[in-house]
Amino acid sequence: MSFRMLVGLAFLLGFWSAGRATLAQTVGGSESVSVVSNTSSEKKTEPAEPRRTRVVFIVAEGCEECDRVLSRLRRPGGDFETMIAAGWRIGSSPENHIQIVDRLNVADLVEKLSVKNFPTVACISNDEIVRAFSSGCTTPLDAWTLNWLMKGKDERPTPLQPEPVRVATTGNYPLRGNHWSVDGIWNPSKELLIQHLRGSVHSTQLASTWKIETWEHEELRSLHDNLHEHEMGGVVPSSQQLLQQQHPASSFTTARKMYGKF
Image (cartoon, rainbow, N blue to C red):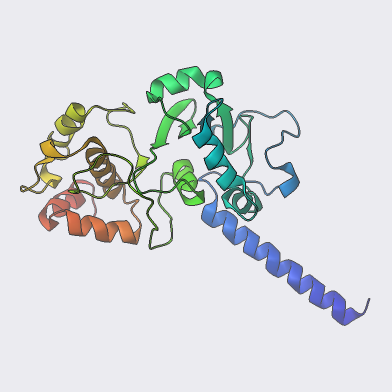
């Protein structure tokens, strides 16, 4: 092999490695991810300690929707393949970044989430639930949603391609499927959501014309989640623009002062 060919091959390998590292930084979780080959996907190679923070993908036996969603994620060139190339580990054991597990094996987690429909996806850290996902609220279950679950920060490129709404809505507020807890409760009732939003923390952030008592459950959750992320400064530009359109400027001035954001 000539010297010129060797130089060209070295350049191509360096370019491919740099692109892969960039993808890992973009799609990877808040903790570091170790790059693995595609052949190790969804296979346990050796015993390892459970990952402290991981996304738990809960399925049920005989669940057609679980099979459909996993087939989409696992298809060649799909989300799982992209994530694996970026360094994510995906499999059935707890050392993976995404652990695919039957609901019977995590009964206590299912009880905490108060869910009956599957698949159910949540992020746990030190055995505590920190974030969860609800389907049917326009947010697709894809690599970017899994990335949000791991990191708690929406880094999805804009614009979002929303999925069809499959939950009740009045149309008063845009829906989202990425959820935070309400005072540690992962499936809050409508009454609890209204009480929380009308409380001292969020009442000044609501438009006086909003009659949230007439809104549907998922609209209230979406409002709470957007307020929560705005306060943390974790909203991407597209979401920021949406918030400015949906919320009065004076309310967010109050929120920025409260949290030291001006």
